[in-house]
Amino acid sequence: MRWEQLFADLEAQLAEEETAIEGQEDASRARTEWGRLRWADRLRGSLGQPVTLGCRGAGEVAGRLVEIGVDWVLLEDGQRREVLVAQRVVRTVAGLTARTAGETDQGAVGRRLDLRWALRGLARDRAAVQCLLDDGGAVTGTVDRVGADFVELAEHPADLPRRRSAVTGVRAVVLDAVAVVRTLPPAV
Image 1 (tube, rainbow, N blue to C red):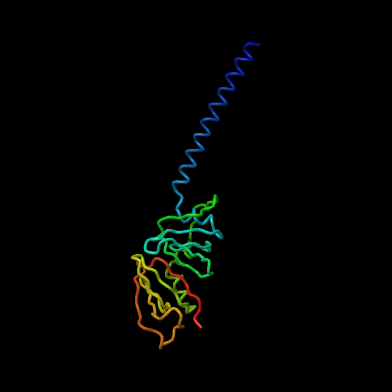
Image 2 (tube, rainbow, N blue to C red; image 1 turned 135 degrees about the vertical axis):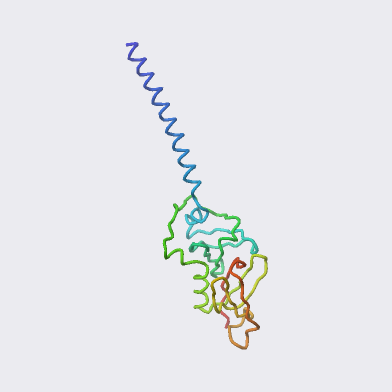
């Protein structure tokens, strides 16, 4: 009977050691997985939820997370305006949910849907925008064209529609300087 108790004790100790080793392996695996995770994937777990992005040149930008592209984030602010944020200017993210999206492979098509693609959508819609720059500057107008490394805005007052008579100038903005592009309410 003592032998049975001894073997039972040894089996229990072995089981405890195996459980501890498995726990260490799980923790190590989890650290490795987290180490591969990009902040945009972490943010993707909060789609549809309110978040606040701390951005170089634009300060805090808050809104409901609508979409995440290859190099941009789209929010809808409290006034139901679209807010396009260049990922490279994001410094902090607040409001993350407990969910995290796994690593995503954008694929060939997804990689082409970059900031230029999103800005071309604004040009197609003839939307009036406020373009905040990474140095804190701002340009207001309508996106006319998007080049390989710049966006061209017809500058006009925000409360006027883009008409030849309202345009005060045309400004090319280097894409690397674009921090946030916010749509403006339609002028009447």
